[in-house]
Image (cartoon, rainbow, N blue to C red; front, top):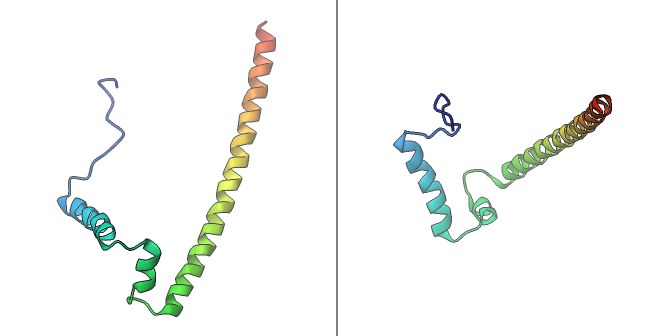
Length: 94
């Protein structure tokens, strides 16, 4: 890494952030429950609310999946365009 550049990775210096993160992962591991079991056993929301939230999550996942597919198509198209341009440049140079 050159001397004038700052590192890309930044670290949180907030100890509360680390403590919350540690508690999150430690709690899930120590309980021995899977995330699905933790969701099913949660009493924070009634069952119908859980179903509504899951439905909303599914809708958002579908939307994101569509966006990812579109970005993939755009990326592949750009790649093909670059290949064609490079081929044209190569034929002009030689």
